[in-house]
Image: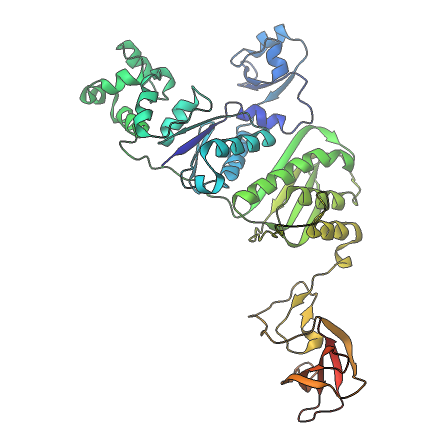
Length: 470
């Protein structure tokens, strides 16, 4: 097995910066109570001004007069962590969350995503697009990948033999050992994992307990580590808050793009789509404005989801400024991507049909465009329906049906046609007052056209034209 570790050293700060259009202003995340607040993380501008994590807020304010201070929100950090786990689930079914990191088993995915250098490049491209700084390492065990990610970026250890030598030089205070073990080992003169692994195990057990030996065994793969694997949720509830008020719908484009992008990321991870979801705009007094979004078919393309939602939101008027936005999707149906031909002649920048369809619906209204669905009713007049709540039990039988069905049957003029197939008797509809009793035939006219006609049962004349075959 091969495990990739995606270490996220700036997870809390990156999550905050994703909510902002610009990250140029100095920003510091702080923790602690009002009397002893200290800096947890800073952005690049604050770091350039001399602010550092661990610094007391009072000392930072003495260095830099004007910078934004934001209280660290552990719940928000957990949200970003799980969002990235949903993203990683797209690449592996074995994903686990560790502090500031995600580990995923990739050996079974190399056949699909290519050799590790290509796979790694794809992971990095995705993480850069999502806005998270990262380190990535590869190792035969998840714990070894986790430890090595704290020291290296881009290191790939593909075999247990190489892993042993890679771990031997790791300092014990960087080996993520159980609490207190590193200080005790340094006091004994054991400074690297190599020296630690050569030490007598019985003595280590008596001095530090079984947890240290378990850690070493999980590092080297002597004992397989049992992980609590991530499973994607059955519903999605994404949110974004901001410190200022937004009074115009046009200014909601940035948070909306972020939320629909995160929605698409989660959907891609679970290989699903979304057909209905709701955007809730939360106002300052706690009231909200809901915008319901409905699509004709499940989709997950971020551009389509964003554009369709934005078009719906452009038609509303805000009664109050907005301070937060939620995106809730209770149903996540399976998604079937639409394939394109290998020699597709469509222009490169042409919109796909699905996106044009949803754009028209958002501009003209839900009732402007409908989707035909086949029913199991054999009567031609009821063989298709645009009703959204229609329930189809089973599949319609595969019988010859014309591609052009007339709205109403008309008499077939001209010489008697030549019968190609039939009869097919339809005798049904007694329950709704539209009962029919007809014998249908596929015929060929004197002009060589194929038609779908019917007549009274038992007769072969007085043809009524129902449709034309292509």
